[in-house]
Every structure is written in C-alpha cells, then in structure tokens.
Length: 232
Image 1 (tube, rainbow, N blue to C red):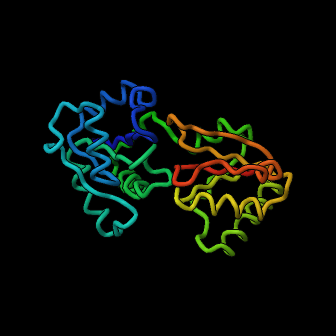
Image 2 (cartoon, rainbow, N blue to C red):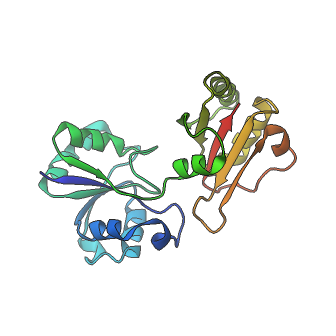
C-alpha cells in the first residue's frame, strides 16, 4: 500500500525551521514525487528543505482550483505507483485548498493518508484570538460583491450570536481593507473581531477587540495574508 503524505508548507518566508518539524523534513526528503498547487512555490519550498535530490529530478504534478475533476482522477496511478506528497501553496494542504479532492480519491482507493504537522493560519488565529475555541466554523471566502458580502457578514454575526460560535473567514489579500470596512459597517458595535495577519511572519499582527474600538484605527493589512474572526 502506498501513502499520500499531506505536507505542510510555509506561511511566511524564512520560517522553515521554526514551523516545520525535523521529522516532517525527513519524510519530505524521502519522497520523489509531489502533487502541488503551484510549481514555482513548490520548487522554492523543496529547495529550502535541502531535498537531497536535484529539484529538476523530482516529479511535480499540478493540482489547483482550476484543475477539472477529470484531471484529478488521472493523478490516481501516480499516487498508487509510489509514496507521494501533497503540497499546498501555503500552510497545510486540503484545508481551504483544492487538494481535498485528491485526499478523498486516495481514501476511495485504499491509499493510506498521513497528515504531517505544520502551520495552519486558521487554527493559529483561533488559538490566539481569545474567542470561542470550543465551537467555531471556517466559512472560507465571502462573496466579492459588496452588497452580498455585507449580507453574508450579517448572517454570520447572527449565527455566531445564536450558536455562540466563532465565525472564521479569509480574503484575497488585496481585498483585505474593503472586507474590513464591510465588517465594521455591518456588525454591531459590541461584536468582537480578530484580525490575524502575516501569521508566523516577522510582521505578525494578531489583535481582538470590539467593532467599536476597531473603528478608531484600521490595521495596515493591505496585501498581507490575513484571517478574520467574529464572535457576537
């Protein structure tokens, strides 16, 4: 039986040895093929790990949000032939990541799946937020259009109040500020908001306070990978 290893990547540059355990690097060094979200990012990560093989000799197969379902099934013979790694562009694979489709395929075909320890901006944000860590929901990306996004934020706030549940979501970094403004205009003044930006990086910023207090000063998170959490 072959194994599909779920390999964590970096959330921020130059953090390899502070966020990736040595036993994970040992597993990575033993793999000769990887299914990756982005070729360039994957090669850079493997070079940082000092993989014993020349990078050009490592087999890389692409799987991202644009990969059709029919193409994902073509990866099955590859992960059946030998142990392989699934590598996200940032953080852990298969969470807010198209790799989950390959993981499901592996289970359906009796291929062992092994998750490896590494950084998750989502979990690290809830850890550091002070919000409810017993009940929380990650809802991914919100609608792009302003009106729909504001309605979604209000719905999440209501759900948080009704279920006493933390709501977690993310955005494409260049739209962070607009999302933040929509949160501030849509939520009640007493609702708690956590902004977790550049998690594990040198510019890491994690802060929780009420919507009312956030309105006094916006954080500088334009184009910075961020996670947002609310609790009503």
